[in-house]
Length: 160
Image (cartoon, rainbow, N blue to C red; front, side, top):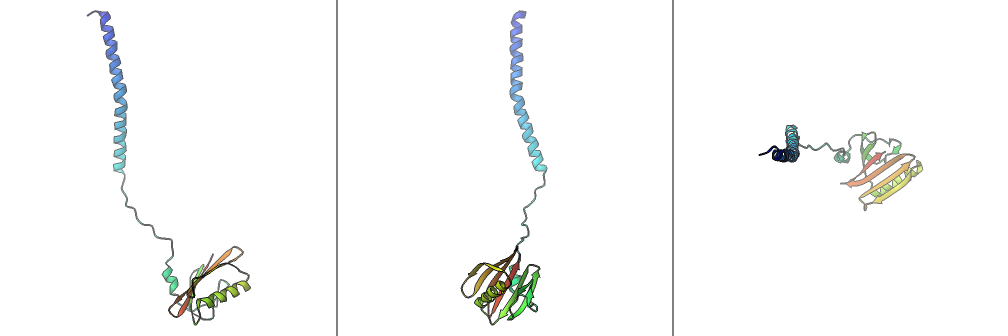
């Protein structure tokens, strides 16, 4: 074969080698990247998801207040019929009262809070057994929830 005929074959051979390299290098790079990702993922510790403790208060504690009731809590009057009362934190107080109905409690607080300068924002009575009231004064909000339990009325005060 002459020298002139060898040069085109050599050029075709070099181009073919380069072309194969251009095709296989990206494939090899992708395979290497996938192997690296797999190795990193398998080396990470696997953690089991755990439930976070709830920030919701345990409402059962409010349903059974113990202790001697106060006559006033955070400038909010407590009914004289209260038989047991308990402060659970600086914003929450509950008490039980005997000889009154949920309607009596609502009537008491509507009159007392108005006298103290509070404005009634919401009042809903769930029959003669339950009710919820909201009062506002300046930047404070007082929620009063009333429910009947056996012969007693339970009153929950939450001041924000």
